[in-house]
Amino acid sequence: MNKYQVYTLSNFTKIPQLQSFSTTAIEAIKVVGNVLPFKVNNYVTEELIDWANIPEDPIYQLTFPQKEMLSEGDFQKMAEALTANYKKPLLKEVANEIRYGLNPHPAGQQKNIPHLDDTPLTGIQHKYRETLLFFPSNSQTCHAYCTFCFRWPQFVGIDELKFAMKETELLVAYLQQHPEVTDVLFTGGDPMVMSAKNLASYLHPLMEANLPSLQTIRIGTKALGYWPYRFLTDKDADDMLRLFEEVVNKGYHLAFMAHFNHPRELQTPAVEKAIKRILSTGAQIRTQSPIMRHINDCVQDWRDMWRQQVKLGCIPYYMFIARDTGAQDYFAVTLEEAWHIYRKAYQQVSGVARTVRGPSMSANPGKVQVVGITEINGVEVFVLNFIQGRNPQWANRPFFAKYDPKAIWLDELEPAFNQPTFFFEENFEEALKVS
Ligand SMILES: *Cc1c(COP(=O)(O)O)cnc(C)c1O
Ligand code: SF4
Image 1 (cartoon, rainbow, N blue to C red):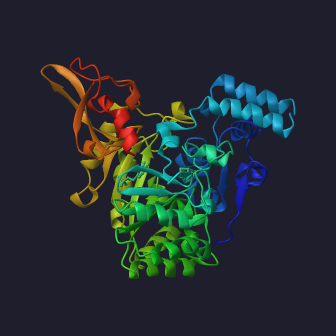
Image 2: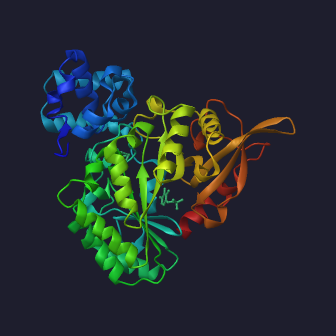
């Protein structure tokens, strides 16, 4: 198989495996799909989803909207709008009303937009000193959409900014003024939806600028999980690989930040071949995923993922905690449970897979790792640690929060030992100004 067939709201009823679905099941997909992003392709439906195990199948949960992803009230609201045959603009209004109730901009993302002199650079986010996120305007989509995606406002069109920018020129100018940046991370959406030619139009000027401080070019992508044929049989697959080689030969570290959510995504012949081809260019592949109920909330999945990744030559990098946005209630795993799963899986892999770090929350002050739960002087606490901080000096600083078995996110936690605030809250406003 290599012809790319995309399914969205407008044609998903043609998916062969859906022909046995009841009308109610199809309607539910329509209702939720009108609020959250929905897109799959024939690789996902034919090679990844196990249709004998619906609706529990993890890849089905990952890509197909589920009724329970919306509250009953929200579901009814959208169902009624569809039954009443609302015209598009009105339907969108109803959808947006629901969307704005789902925290579309978590972790202060809109606060991370940097400036070049007085011009806001809407296609860049600069939160951590060394690493700049770059959102090429041509990569604001993906080969399929994850139902849990925290970038969902971009796909459903409620983000006017879209964090996107055309000009690499501005990116280069910003980097010239910011020699502290060593890494540029291309993100989106998924930069691997771009043609090789398109990606080259960003990469060439970036490399030609000969920025002495730039070391690593990263590409955040889920193409290996959703469309490995991107690197095998797509028209410009070979051009893409040659472009990677070019980056490596120019002396940059090319880091593929690959998003895999379930071991099954690492088991098809296509993904194995694609990984081999990418590694043969001299690029490295690091892997990351959030931990989510209904998808990968078990020890075995993580153990198997990390083992298989190492076997294929990839480097396990991050386990994230599902963000506080979109259908978070549906996917939420408590901090305690995430830590247990992380720890038990970690115990079952060898040292070469223990490059992974987590479970980590990408929260407003930084990436906060749940190191564990312990007792200090008879008080049960969470031990937390900054993997990354808005203020670089926070990194690797452990701190304590009151143990809370129900907590799923940092903002629900309280400082332990009767402290009035966490240490980073004292100079938080200051740190915001620095970035
Ligand atoms: C995770 C993240 C990065 C990259 O952090 P690393 O720890 O270097 O991988 C950069 N910017 C933002 C906003 C992030 O959330
Ligand atoms: S691949 Fe990434 S950006 Fe695309 S839908 Fe999934 S989580 Fe969102």
